[in-house]
Image 1 (tube, one colour):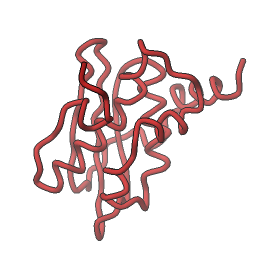
Image 2: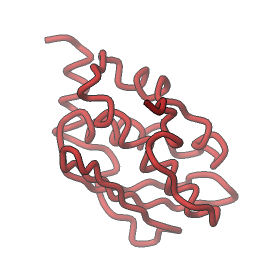
Image 3: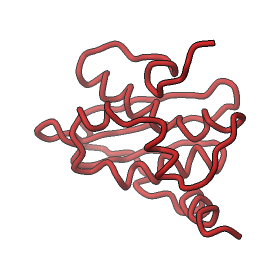
Length: 137
């Protein structure tokens, strides 16, 4: 098996930061209605930076591993850095090719995290096109 695929399965089987934060600054949920994947994210913010991350969710290995991998990267990131992340950043973190049928699975973590930050900032949440940079067809 490919080492990167092993990493995805490890994060799926042993997700990092997989628990609600009881002392969070905020929480936010997103669903991928096309496949049923869901993510519930809790963040503790201090001085405009992510201090702690907690999350729960259900879904395929790609969506859950993506959130687990991103949750390891987030502590210490500023709100601005989170909002500047791109789909390419997530694909790089995952380290495996993502086909057209799985891109929403891979990018659900980014969509959830960006909307969580927007919510904290008192701004309206956005759709997939805006949060992950999908092109309108």
